[in-house]
Picture (tube, rainbow, N blue to C red):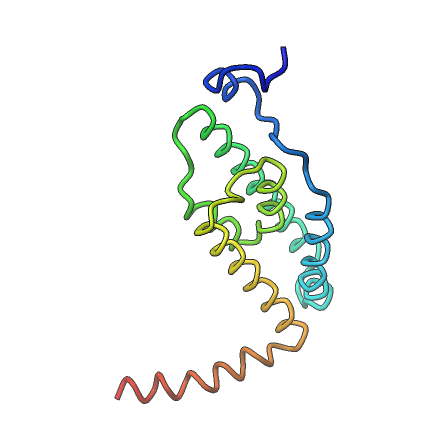
Length: 154
């Protein structure tokens, strides 16, 4: 029996398979978004093995969190708070989050979630570009913000 012929209650607990085909264009988007962070990683003064290992670890954890949350959503169980998913994305798991969202069709249609997600991706892109530029933009922002804070505290 095909799964789409089952009643909704039975269908939700049967499988975790995604309902629509994965659009491989998202993989290209991800690869393009990884150019900046990859360049920043290469220029980093830290040991790249540790940074790469940490990135792999947080991305595996993030992907697993999305799978768990999707399973819990289908089984109507306890879900992960959205803030926790966003924290994993902010810690570096945004590439896995993008793949999981598109592969499992999870959190990809909720606008409020997507706005925060893409802001996090934008922060990572900005940090990568700024890192390659020797933090030029951050220094300019700091030079602009520091006097404003100093004047406000008087």
